[in-house]
Length: 357
Ligand SMILES: NC(=O)c1ccc[n+]([C@@H]2O[C@H](COP(=O)([O-])OP(=O)(O)OC[C@H]3O[C@@H](n4cnc5c(N)ncnc54)[C@H](O)[C@@H]3O)[C@@H](O)[C@H]2O)c1
Image (cartoon, rainbow, N blue to C red):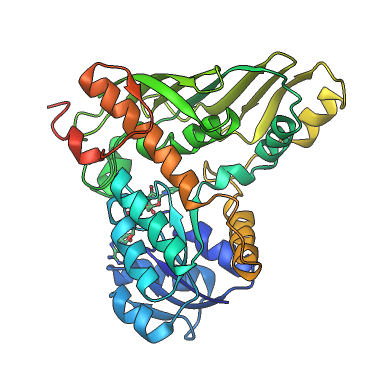
């Protein structure tokens, strides 16, 4: 399958490695900065058959890839995705899928109309720990779900934001919730049944006064099935990343996934006693080299299979929209000091420009 990557920055090695591991035919890479492409060429021994472009339109015209991954700054995802679909490309779009509800809806509509597959790159859904927990949810082992909590307690320093000046801006990114916490927000919403009734949130910029958006976000969620969610995410933790943790509390089960990025099952308690908690904790314990984890490779495998078998990807564009919607709702609630009802309409990160000025 002919594959191309647009955006060869910080997360791009995970994409190239995933494409190689899945034996995709990498036909091209594209970046505005030639040095970024050259770095990846050397690191992954891409060779001359992998053409390099600075203009993605030219790349799409000449290379005709069947699958394109978009890993540019977040504010560019939607426009590039819509353009790629004009060339018949299936897509893996880095998170967040877009920065506005309208853009996410356009991506979903166009993909449906053109029968193209679009995957939102929430790779943590493929963590072994998360797959095990999801299986327990699907088998209804928790009984009635009471509540779940998602914590992202990470550290991002001045240098991280300096390295790419789009980070932390309302036009291209958003803050800790939109960038760093959106994976866990996706997991929480998904595990709790997806359907949100209402949200109340508070956000602030306490530490990184050189970014526009929040570096701390806290929210309470009421789901339509009567359960609750708590979100807490920050990039202010001293002096380094502490954890990305997901708790689920049900009538008959209690689970905690922790570690750097929900890769470790730390608690596993079920009334059905179907498995040995100590064995589960031993078995579901991964320690990846960074917070991006090992999920890109199985996510790619799923998308390739979805294209071949004409089915939806495991994490489709609607899932990407749901995570985006929840973050935007928290922003809106914080801004308006109100409870925000779902579904959320016509909301974008740029609505919150100037919030912390
Ligand atoms: N899934 C994850 O865990 C994860 C982790 C990190 C980043 N991300 C997401 O990936 C995206 C990229 O993040 P990053 O940290 O790699 O950013 P980055 O700034 O390091 O890289 C972005 C790259 O895109 C290139 N680019 C911009 N416009 C382009 C265009 N029109 N055509 C071709 N290339 C273009 C830039 O030159 C840059 O090299 C963001 O949306 C971010 O939220 C996801």
